[in-house]
Image 1 (spheres, rainbow over the protein chains, first blue to last red):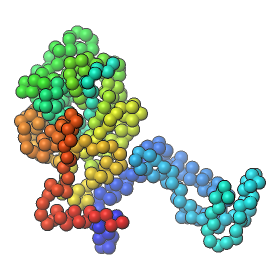
Image 2 (cartoon, chains in turn red, blue; image 1 turned 180 degrees about the horizontal axis):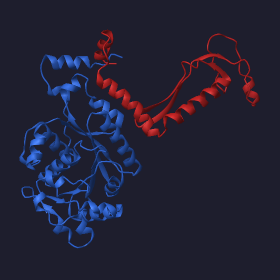
Image 3 (cartoon, helix red, strand yellow; image 1 turned 90 degrees about the vertical axis):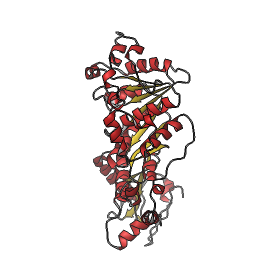
Image 4 (cartoon, each protein chain N blue to C red; image 1 turned 45 degrees about the vertical axis):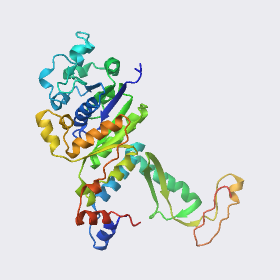
Length: 114
Length: 272
């Protein structure tokens, strides 16, 4: 954020149009470059959320899966706030059953290698 | 097929009207003035204009079409510039050529040109269809020209993607029609915004300049008469950089003076 953006925000004005242009471009180029149409992205988002929610309870409202791009490399970025881990983890691998299924209220993320 | 020492450079943009042909004409003259034997090839067969910008429209006898059909020799089709004898134009043929023209045809023409010229500039048509593919087939390097507008940058990005898959290297960027005042007020994409998004090295920066229109009216590119206008200097500097000279880029923020300019600069400070 530049000083001008900050002042605009303070005064309740719109951000400078160059800032808007940059943000819109970054978004549209991430899509152009990956050749993913919005429907496909939405479907992928739903499936990712489905898989993740098998393991942990996530905040579906806040969850966000999007494309970001930097240096002509596009990345799929998922930001999924975890409410709590699921008490029972189902996967067939026995090791995975070891995963601590805390009832803790605090978000717990245990790496799969644990 | 490589002719040692000779270079073929594609000048392209994706979007139309951002300044491909003007850049080609001005670079052609500027390179020729530096002693490079330079050929400019109008690869925009549908809507040719390079002849007009160079003021050579009345001197065309044969075109690339006759050269390909072998109904004339290359040197018969080339139109030499009167004031700048190091520069020659190979005019685009009839738009009907588009029906049968193949990438191999362009490769053949450019290979022929490279036998007798140090640099071949290929003025690419807008778009990313066959015309672009034909023109790109014959190029080893590329200059992508864009303006600081969302549509032009987006289209440039598509073109860069296509050039990358073809292995064309290096690809360099020219940012055209820069308005320092608008940039200072953050009402125009900043130079860094564009270079970051497109991830290309900046070969040159051309300020918005009314003299460009005057020069096209006359068919005398700005670089021809040693004009000191901002665009003329920018084009000459680009030509020098192409030849390997290190010429510093202008800073749009430094073009303006006075208190307002200072304030504008301050407002661009990144705070977080």
